[in-house]
Image 1 (cartoon, one colour):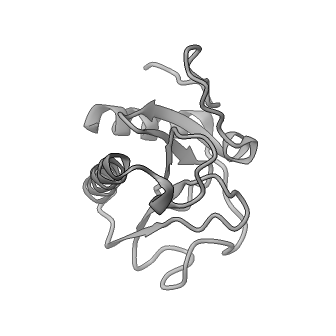
Image 2 (image 1 turned 90 degrees about the vertical axis):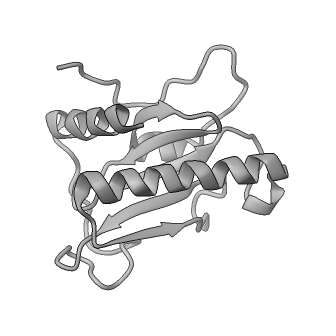
Length: 146
């Protein structure tokens, strides 16, 4: 099985800068047309973060309209992937940005028996970090689906 780099590796030709807090809290999965796709390092939930590779953008409305449309398509693709791969009962999607102002969208698969249900996952309890093998398995599942 291929093992993946646990941290974001910027494209050498890109001037995009990912917030260090996102780098510290996630595993890098892949780049889509607009977004870098990251796995939140919390094994309690299938939790993906989509980050449009546009510097100095804090809000969705700040993106060009073509990027807004592409962002929605990529969020839908990631949500459908979480729903099908993890048999989630509900998908939570949010662009909060109170701690990390860089635009990033959380896409979280929820089950009625998960630790935080029905409350939001943000700030609930203590995260359980992935073992490297488990993170690799989830990353592989996403890459195979996307």
